[in-house]
Image (cartoon, rainbow, N blue to C red):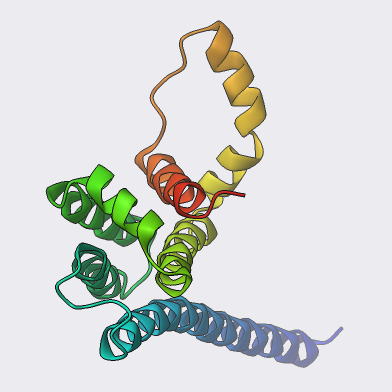
Length: 178
């Protein structure tokens, strides 16, 4: 190979890597938008239920989940694991302020449409946290083994991201039992 051919090969390789990097950034932005729009859709459904009289704005379920969705949207603009954890912690704080048990009873007495919105919110939050953390995905895949060990020896504390994922998963399971 001549020096000119090597130079052209290097230029072509650099151009290809640049293009791949650009496409990778575009794909990440699209994924971020998709997850964020899932939250917008849930907020729109809450507003629709309120407008049709199915879920009055004074209802605890509406107040808590409308606030939780808005907090999640505002905090999740970059959709990093840390921003999702911050949003989830703020949302959990809002839930605790409204007395979580009373809220869960209200959700269980609500119409199927309202329960569907709450279920979708829990699923979206769980999916966002799960999809944005490679370590969390690996941790969940190994959860049975970790539980096996934890039952026999004292396990170290779980990462906050995993606790956030478990919180939303458990909320989904309580609202919509299988």
